[in-house]
Amino acid sequence: MRNCDRAVTKVLSDRKQKILCAVVDSYIDSANPISSKEIQEKYLPDCSSATIRNELSALESMGYLIQPHVSAGRVPSERAFRYYDNRLMCDEQLSPDDVDIIDKIFAKRHQTVEELMRAVTEVIAEVTDYTSIAVKEDMSDTITAIRLLDLINGKLLVVIVTDSRVLKDGMVDLPDDFTDGMITQAERWLNKIFVGKHVSEFVNFDYPFALVNDEFRDFNALFKKIIDTLKRVSLQNGMDVTMSGENNIFRHTEYAENTQNAQKFLSQLEQKDKIAELFTDDGGRPGSVTVKIGTSDKAIEGCSVVTTRVNLGENVSGSIGVIGPVRMDYKKVLGVLEKISLVMIELIGDKNK
Image (cartoon, rainbow, N blue to C red):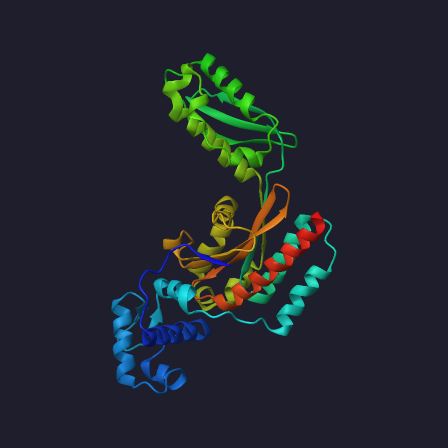
């Protein structure tokens, strides 16, 4: 099952769809603009060159195509790739060699989830030629204490203590009239509600305004900030990011011929918190696949992100996928991720029996 962040509202005519599909497929293969003559010769021999030119102009005016130079052919826009993914792309069967590579990975015995995730990212990077990322979300820790520490500069440091670690990375601005005694009372209230619960329960917690004591009724906004900060700290600290194939970007024209783009891409990969959020904010069920294309889909500028959700055990879930240029071979990537997610569902299911 596939999700797309942005719905396509207008369906193009059959001929426009065929031409748009031809432009996208050609651009994915060659990274070069395509002319009306090439489209006629390779894809639509029954259509006149003049008709194709008119349709190309119409698609350009609709925002689906770009003409880099007056004398050049057209290339697809991000909007075109989004339409292609939503409506035009057919499922692609993986080659026997690709299936064999994937099957061999799962035939091996992996002692830990971390080993499995490492193996999965390596095989995805090998088969797709893109950078592969896996994010494990471990929310199985039990909360043993919550601390609110008043700092000198009018800020509150929020800390979660679990049975295996201390999570602290959240700051909240304190109102001037929030006293030391109120901080102590607020800490006591939070501990009463959350101690003994799994982090996963805390992350899915809805702020209960009705439970707040009258003393704190005027500070509902502050309490919500504290809860939201604690949730963010829990999520960030519960995530483990695994990456493979970072140098695969140099196999693609967008980066091989532009060192500035390559440096920007690699620097984005170093921001593990942002990468983790990008790969896990889809909210899909295990087996669902999400495609994000460009900045308008909350991806990275000039990049696409394709992910699938996986269940790794009780209170442990994750996402695996690829990040690469917008000019991505979506058919192959989706085929690889769907194959791997199905095998992982079976594998984890067998382990839990």
